[in-house]
Length: 301
Image 1 (cartoon, rainbow, N blue to C red):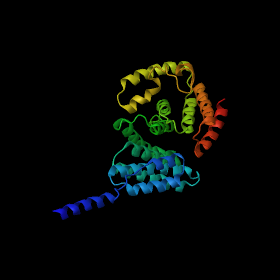
Image 2 (image 1 turned 135 degrees about the horizontal axis):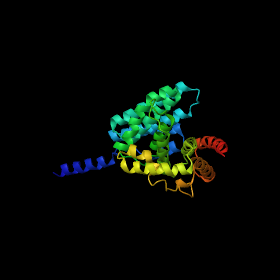
Image 3 (image 1 turned 135 degrees about the vertical axis):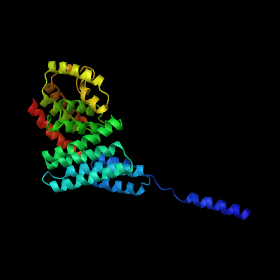
Image 4 (image 1 turned 120 degrees about the vertical axis):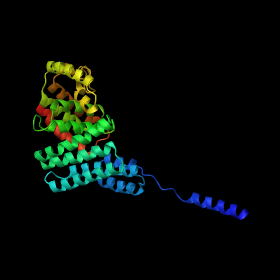
C-alpha cells in the first residue's frame, strides 16, 4: 500500500514537470503587422500556427495570414501584376481555410479584401465579376455577425459602392458609399493614423459636390430611411442622415448641415495634414499616403 502511494506521488510530481502545450499568442504578430514588418510577421504567425490545436485557434491564425497577404500584395510594384495576383489569391485561400475551420467576421473581411485587390489589379471588368461575392461576404459581417465597429469593413463597403458603376451595369451608389465611409471614420482605432480613410472620404465628398442646402434637404430624407430600414447593411446606407445631418464630425466645429461637400472635403484633408505632424505612431505607408493627400489638398484649394 505504501509502495503504491509512493509511486502515485512520484507520478504526480513527474507529471507536474511536463510543460503544458502553449496556446497561441497573437500579440507580437499583430504588433508586427501594425509596424508593417511583414516578413517577421509571417514568421511569427507560422510559429503560432504550430501551436494552434483547436479549430478556432487555427482560424485565428489563418485570417491573420489572409490580412498579411493584402499587405504583401500591396507592397509589390504596380507593374508586377502576376506577383500581386499570387499574393492576393494566397490570401483568399487562407481566408477560406479560416472560414472552414471556424466561421468568423475577420475571415470574411480579409477574403473580401484580397478579392477586391485582385479585381482592382486585373481591371474594371474583372472587378465587376468579383463584386457580388464581395458584397455577400461583407453582408455576412454586418448582418449575420452584427459587426458594426470594424473600420476596415466599412471602408471596403464604401470603396465597393463608390468604385462600381450604378444603374443597370452594377450596384454602385456614391451616396451610400459616403454613409459607409462616415461609419468607417467613426470606428477608427486610436493607435494608427489611417490616412487612406481620410483621403477616401475627401474624394467621395468632392466628387458628389452637394451644396449645404442640398445636404440639409437630402439628410432629412435619409433620416426617414434610417428609421424605417431593418437590416444593418440597408440601414447604414443612410447613416449620414441619421439625425437629419445635425451631427458634428470630430474634425469639424460645425454640423454637417452647415457646410457643402467640397468644404467638408477640404476640412477632412486639413485635419489629417495637421494630425500627421503630431502623430507618434507613424508607419512607412503613412508617408506614401500623405504625399497623395498633399497633392489632393492643393488641387482642392
